[in-house]
Length: 239
Image 1 (cartoon, rainbow, N blue to C red):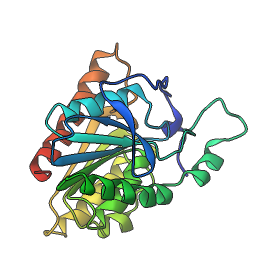
Image 2 (cartoon, rainbow, N blue to C red):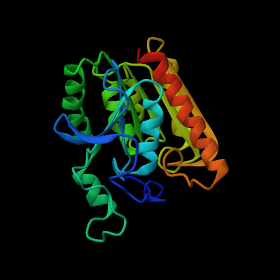
Image 3 (cartoon, helix red, strand yellow):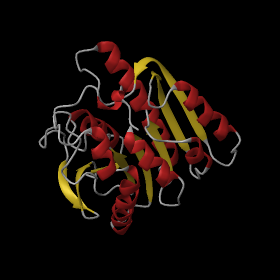
């Protein structure tokens, strides 16, 4: 089950944030940013707080500025996790919006991108979105994946990965602790056909890449380093 860390530092959601706009892609409301003429797409998959989180949209805009067409679908159908909703605690919410459903919903999104002329697609998954990303990485739907402090990802998942994958973990993470990230790294080392990059960021906690405080210089620096690592991976494999 998703630990308390997944629920910490909830963002203030806003439908108006970001440089892009909301369109329907693959039947889902989707934050879209970047040039629609690009043949390279990035699918960003949110954590439990959904696609209206300002820092996630800032990240999408940053990736778009590097020349990618970026889509951030609302896999939660307007029902992101709300910590103050006592009637729907995290355990119940996860049952309704599990990563398995996200994986199925991602397929028509990717198909729509291809129909628009996209030739290569990478996926970045944050927290619970990392589980959706790794499911896609087991298939031929995408060209590469990046997992940012993922939740729910197992050793068995990593064994089935088919595409180049980067895993960015946190030193202070009860959900996917460093010892588990190291196991992922070991498994990938025995899969020479799959290029992999595994990194554990010191002194940061689960969620640091999108739930940082803008006024905390060290937190921003760590988040930006992870963002650059992700962008480097996309630049390498989404051509």
